[in-house]
Structure formats: structure tokens, C-alpha cells
Amino acid sequence: MTNPERRAFLDRHRQSEFPGSIVDVLAAARQGRDLIAEFENQKGMQVANTPEERQQGLRSSHQAGNTEASMAFPNTPPNQEFNTRGMRAPIDINQFNDAGNLVKSYEAVPPGVSNLKMSSQGGTVIETPSKMQAGGVSLDYRVAQELAKRKGSTPEFYLASADTMGYHESGPNQRMAINALQEPTPTGRGTFQIEGKDGSNTLETAQKHLRRTMGYWGETPPQNIMDSRDAAQLTYEEQRALTLAHLLQGPASMADYASGKSTLAEVWATGWKKKFKNPEEKQLGINKFNASRLDAKKKGIPEPNYIKRKLGGKKRK
Image (cartoon, rainbow, N blue to C red):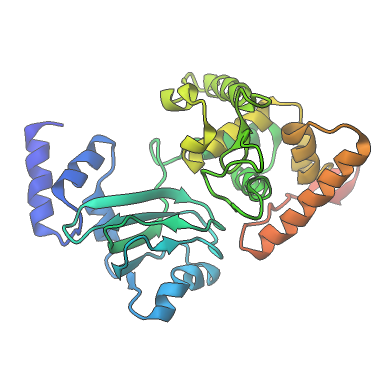
């Protein structure tokens, strides 16, 4: 960043009502984000003043179809927990202490996540629509675009499919938690329970699949993803990108799934879980997955929408 650019941010920070510090503004600018512009675009955001408003959060706005809404939660107590139950799209959650410093941040939190604990400093928490990365498009969305290009359907279809898989994999006690650990033995880690070397080593395979996928674009994966030995330490977007790349490059017939010839449960069983001793155990696993899928739908996880295609002269969903 040049000195004139730095001075411009200092001037804008003094003139704006942005609650964060100039240190946060400059740090974000080095990452390609303009926090002041984002804040000014959110002028007129909702403010949660009553207990009812704080409990409801952005849920009612999302359920009414307004996923671009933002909300501020002033005077948030220390260690307060937030959630995205009932949301219809990912959001960013940022906590600023009374001095205006950013002290806690969750990016691209998907619907259905609980127990998002804020820091012990209290202050103001702001929920906003998730800001995409990489020139406006996040890595997981780009992988979903590649799936749609090669296998059919839409990126949103695959993102919703991954969210449903994550809901099932993370289990009833850690629903959608990005740092979920498999119970009782923590071989599976993160929302999608990606196993490392102490298990089936799905993480290393998924990393190879992500490298192959990004090779289509003439790019290499972010180093932090490739160096990771614990999926629970990655962001949700990074975990979901690995999952989608694994589905794209793995054994599941994603084209059949996109066209309606197979189901998400079958994709999960053949392309993700894979470890079944016999057909009966596999069917039991599929039944449990379908139960989770229906529960996820009730909790606000978007249901994948099949595109109608002509198959053998008939339309299928």
C-alpha cells in the first residue's frame, strides 16, 4: 500500500462513522477489502434493541426473502453466543469492542450453525451478508461452478448439497460447527468430518482433488489449505471447497445426481462415506442421511433443487 493510499484511508476513516479502528481498515485493505465502503453501504441497517429483536436477529428478514439485510447488536454481553438457525444464506459476523477494535470475526457462516461464541470483551456485533472473496467469488463457489460446468445443474445446487452433507456429518451435538470433532474418536474433523492420517486420510485426497480442480484454471490452491493437517482449523468456505472438489474428482456419479437419476444420499454413500461392510449397513446409513436431510430442511438449510431434464423422453426431478 502506498503512502497516498494510506492517507486516503485515514481521511475517510475520520470522516465516517465506521466503528472499527484504522488498524483494522488498513489490515483489511491489504487483503483487498474496503471496510469503510462496506460499512457505508450498510447505512440504515437494522438495530437489535429489544430482547425480542436480539433473539430473532436477521432470521425474519431472511425468511421474508431479504438476504441482503444487516443488523447491529449494540451492548452485547461478553462471551455471547450467536447462531444462524433459520437463515437462508451465509452471513459475516464481526464483533467490535468499545474501543472500536475488531475482536472476533466469523466469515461466510452458513445457515443452521449454533454456538458462535463472541469474545469476552463485549461491545457491538454486526451481522452482514457474506462478502465473497477472490474477485467477488469465493473458492467454494468457484468449485461449485466447475461442477455445474462439467456435470450439469447450477453452483447453488452443489453448495446446498454440500450444506446438507455437512449438517448430517457434523452430528446432532455439533450441527454445522466448523470445528466439530467426530464422536467418540476424533478422526473426522470439521463440519464435513474430513479425516486426516489417523483415519481414512480423506483430507490428503481432497487436497489433491482441489489441486487438480484449480489446475483447470491454471491456478494452485491456497497454501494454508494444502498445508493443513486438520480440517477443523479451516474456514467453512475452505472445508466446503475441499468437499466439492472431492465430489467432482471422486467416484460418485455427479452427472447422474444433477440429472435426477440418483440422490444426494447415494452421492454421500458412494462419494463421501464409502466405508460400509455390507449392503445392509449402507442402506442403514442412507436412511440416517435422509432423516438428517429432512431435518436440515426444517432448520433452514436450503434444499437442493433439481433442474428438470429430458431423460428418455420424460422429465425428471
